[in-house]
Amino acid sequence: MIDVFLLSGSNLGDRQLYLQQAIQHIETDIAPIVKLSSVYETQSWGKTDAPDYLNQVIQLKTALTARDVLKKILNIETVLGRKREEKWGSRTIDLDILFYGSMIISEPGLQIPHPELQNRRFTLEPLSEIAPDFVHPVFKKSIFQLKSELKDNLIVKML
Image (cartoon, rainbow, N blue to C red; front, side, top):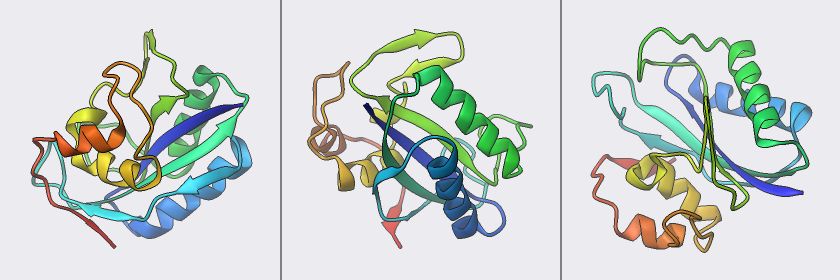
């Protein structure tokens, strides 16, 4: 079984409900959840005029391959009404694989660890809540260290 960390985010509609529905689908379609961070409200990143996001990090253990996890989270996004119309556009739900164990995967359409997580407060705040000692396999630094070195000043607050 591999430890997988996912980031869930929503900035359209009933954001809290979309996060809860994503969790239910993940538990049904992928694997039971081991840990869940608190929910954090975050200013929109990349497209700053968009509504604020709710974000949460989810840890699970699975025997599925990283590619299969990706297929399943993309399907969950579709089921929950995600539309991919513009880069950094608003969405009902966004699910990203942050880590798949300590593996480094670089394939078309699949980059693990997530290539931007070390630059994003909205990712590192909830991740450091549940896995502060997890070591990033590329940077060889703990999540706590990455968070403490962060330059991102986006407002991220626990709900």
